[in-house]
Image (cartoon, rainbow, N blue to C red; front, top):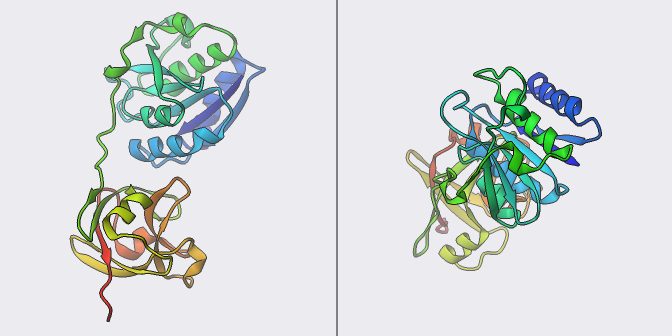
Length: 269
């Protein structure tokens, strides 16, 4: 059975989770997809899972970005149309990935103490609840044994801002900043085309925000501009972003998550 782990824990805590999995299911194949999600950044973690999991083998995928750990937020397992099981907190982290894996089919609470560690801390459910659940599933335990089924309609969903397509302009919100400092937005290439019409790479666009504006080329990739220069491009998940070739757009523009960008065709100088 293939198991992946995605966390905001860093190396040591994520390795502890992997150790729990191997202790219960020593024959499992465990991949740490990432332990570098920005701490507490649920949207960033959700977008990473959404982007990456379709390229991983079918299996059990544990996602842990859990600022509500120890509160009444629920630990859940979601089965998908592709046949995967997604395990993590019910805080919006998992549904975007489930949608990319054929949709959520069923959801269960992880309530049965027989499939947790004997002592459950108030702050490390990744070790004590989520990793044991994944390992027991890999070892052949039925999902129905881990806890009762719940209505998938009751799962927490992220309230992501939708892009706004206007006549000649596109408003998009920065969802997260990746590890290179690129600003990834809520809009995709189709949204851009709907707002501005067909665009050739190299077309100069204007991006503006609450206290600034910039003229940026729309390019296929970073290397189409000089080192240190900025661009608008479509990332590997299909979302529009602002990047700097071998630099950080977040630092360059002083922008971060939640910033609203208005993108238009630039007027000729």
